[in-house]
Length: 448
Image (cartoon, rainbow, N blue to C red; front, side):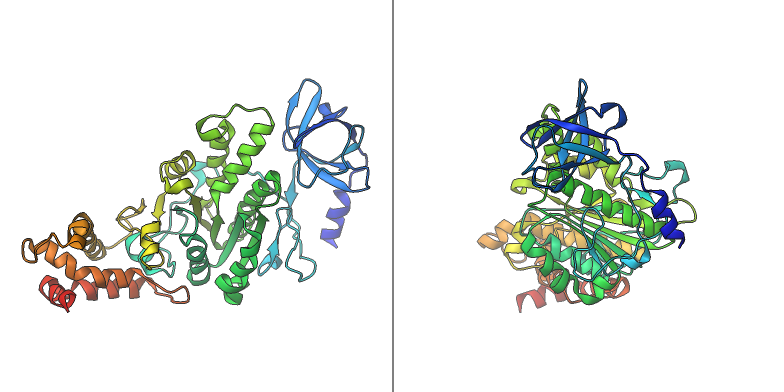
């Protein structure tokens, strides 16, 4: 009853509307309502074929409001009525959203019937908690992936980026983390995802067990730029809801690059000048505003541990979005095509990956173990070309000999099937077992 009363109170007692003054590409010009709307306000255009197209104000030119649509513009023409619906877009999440798949508006798209709404409104474009009121990052979190648990340890409330080109295994790695991590709840945003892969991700990669403790927000690549951008905002809004309920939330987003591309489309349509690689200035303003919403919560609340994939164009890890995101987050996980091509998944290059909470979150024994393993991995990488060409002679350098012996065991350790789960303690125990073979035993095993 309380929820119903709040719904009734939110019904507008008056209707404000303007008229469509022009349409240029995806830009809708609305006149007669400029003094009643602001950036982010939403309207509905009543088309000539009796549809309602939601639009959002993205700018102003003289007395005309500039808007972009959430849907197709067929049927929209000069003189169509544009009715104001929301000045501050909000959503009403609840714990009943767990196990559901929703779109950027929070509407269910999984065919399981209506969704249970909560009583507390949450702004879609809320700001992050004040820096002075935030908790510090918590203890290490078990991601279920041994390459990450041991070499790129992540703490509760930490934000990490997963940097990779297309087809290298980002989505599968996210599904492994969603299914195997010890976080209470997972909120997964599929931003600009291929429509074919959404159902495969939910049914095959995530599975019933992973979905049961998750909420999935979907905006496919064929949807408008506003829908793709709002799906990212919706993902963080839902994570904030569960965080404020006291849960430790795992927020997974695939991908931040497509959010940046959507913001670029919106900025260019609004008349912003293109800068680096065509990205507009607001892209680099919106990225920290989005990503800073994840992290440690206010005192007395839970945490949002964020893992955000970055699709690096042309496998260039220094392109503008990747470079900007790497500077915002608390670490980066680098996945390489060359590793995937030789059949090792997840294709994580642990030597190029960094967690900014390490080594502080590890014990001294764990740090020594990881440092020793990385030393042999680095030695092998430096000499890899000579070893493959047969130019290195066995016995010339004891460190290189040991690195050659250790390499197959470490490679086997880093590989992991998506249904396999390895805890934090088991990961360190397995790595310790490998390193305790000793250089001489490693060389003999490698020769066999």
